[in-house]
Amino acid sequence: MRFSIPAILNYFKGMVPFRIVPAIVTTIFLLTLLAIPAPTGLDENGWKMLAIFLTTILAIILKVMPIGVMALMAIVIVSLMQVTSPNSKGAVADALSSFANPLIWLIVIAVLISLGLRKTGLGRRLGLGFIALLGKRTIGIGYGLVFCELILAPFTPSNTARGGGIIHPIMKSIANAFDSDPAKGTQGKVGTYLALVNYHANPISSAMFVTATAPNPLVLEYISKSTGGAMQLTWVTWALAMFVPGIVALIVMPLVLYFLSPPELKRTPDAVAYAKKELAGMGPLSGKEMVMIGTFAMLLLLWANVPAMIFGPAFTLDPTVVAVLGLFALLITGTINWDDVLSEKSAWDTLIWFGALVMMADQLNKLGVIGWFSNGMKDMISHADLSWQMTAAILVLIFTFAHYMFASTTAHVSAMMLAFLTVGVMLIPAEYQAVFLLMMAASSSIMMTLTHYATGTSPIIFGSGYITMGKWWGVGFIMCLVNLAIFAVVGAVWWRALGYW
Image (cartoon, rainbow, N blue to C red; front, side):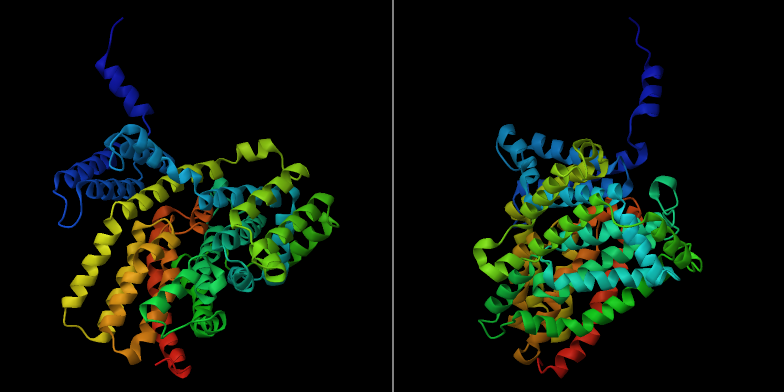
């Protein structure tokens, strides 16, 4: 048996899935970080975990390999380096721990449930209905999606269930009606723009109501704690405070996205007539469509916690339990089948890469990296001679953009918010504290705009293929600044009118 080095090199060049130059850059980056001593206040394992996390993010940005492979790489490195446990058994258990996280399965199951819309034809019917109502312009359809998001937000405490499980399948159906499909390379027709609107409506609506996303009740508790009970927000006072800046942000957002990522099809003069003709051709609702509608109604009522409102807290169900129930209902009624579930690659791809990112974010918190970062920022700001406006701005911006290190808004709020609120209350005069506190509350949702792993909704929409990673991060950064500016300016004026400062 003879070995040929050139043949082996040619094989690796043609078959190995990674890109050579980005792989080398990423490897050098990791080795450089590992060679640097851990900063004061951070132990060696915490520093190594941070190096692994930052390297994984760089590898994803540089597209060294498919995102799922890069996530698996992170799991392998965490397991082999044993930064979370003194032995490999404990390390691999930690590396795989996030796959038991209910949030991750909520995301996966939401993708699987959306199969029913496509398979039954209900999604196409809904898409055609939107086109018939608002289809003369693509931006009109965008505002239709925004309106749906706003209507559902007060009643859907899972922003993932709302944006990813309910609205995203409708958005995909509308895009497909215009033959805008990533599989065909036609996503730019209308799909990319509508997917961006679908996503960026989600963080804004989440900021507007206590019941619009899971971390908001925790934000309320932390605001009360940091002020010693001096500021107590209720569902009504939160909604009133956030409503005006939120509405302005929802109006501005589709216009900004229209400028940043204009759809190829801007005017669709024949779309309304076409949609009405197609709807007529589809005839009345089929049995499977009615099952799908019933399933969605059940999901919406349970995600909105309606039984608990009527019968008491004993009837509260976790959003993931509701999602599992919905998927099971679709399977046992034959609306979708098990082969459909197994063949939905985007759901299982999301399970791997999002699970790995959640795991690393959790370990960063457990190993003290997040606490070290928060305390460092607190000490730095405390010793600087800054105006209250600058102090508030720095705290809000650092808190918001620290979300690049998190794959969960709940984890971010739990790890960092109380510390930042506390230092803000210490440094900002009492008469201006409400502005800072309300901005922090808003930013805890606005920060979802930043990355494709920022919250449960993002991997669902990113996984559908309409938005490239570069566009997601670029547009996300700009929209984060736009939303913060709207809440800071419009919000401050509105809060002044309400007497908060």
